[in-house]
Length: 329
Image (cartoon, rainbow, N blue to C red; front, side, top):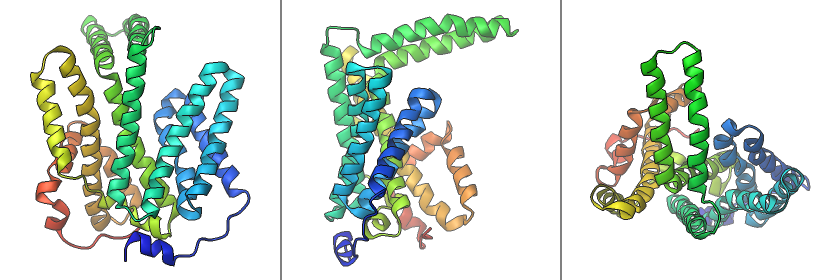
């Protein structure tokens, strides 16, 4: 039975009148957390979509869209009270995109689309939006975001190096810290938008699959399982082409290829992690142990191996080679 047939056969439960505003408020709180706690922000932003995606799975896309509008309105109000004007509108637009695009992907899933393609469509939509923002930033008369990032590194680097010196670090350690920050500044300047794209790809997986997990049991939520994610073979060709362009093309062309290569590498890391998830769910019943192992394989150099696992899955089909039945949990 397809996900569309299963959804048609499953009655939608009645909607509690508080569900939409509570989901919207929870989403807005998670989204706004990165303004108060920037370190939490990288996790809080993708988590912000989970309450809204859960509503979309359980109550329909229209209910999810209403919850998303509530979240955007709350963020707009918070932004207006703290920053005002254009900053508030920008934050509200960002919040609407963060929760709206994953909600739209659920709409395609409810219409019978393949879950992996729904996730890939979500990745493409977000990266396209980021590319558009990059073009607008490059053409704007004011200071570009890359320049602001570079200036921030220039301000922070001397203070960080001095703090290491005062703590008693030797001259070589201080020099390595300064060199690392300067290298990070250059990477951020050249590949900022690619890094944003990689963050979107990883965050979209949290929003799409985390929202489905929160909505289970349910026809569409049960269909969207992370361990079944597959990337089409055509993406491997795009990855190879962008890698070749990054290594062989000169100047600006290499920078563009690099900004495309980074989110593709993130996509293959997510795909590799889904393969590992498939086997971990069979081998380890203790969820806390599985969570710890996911953290371990996310570190260098293991994360490179995970990405290669995802890259070559179209050819090897590791899940079929491994055989067996996945534990549903």
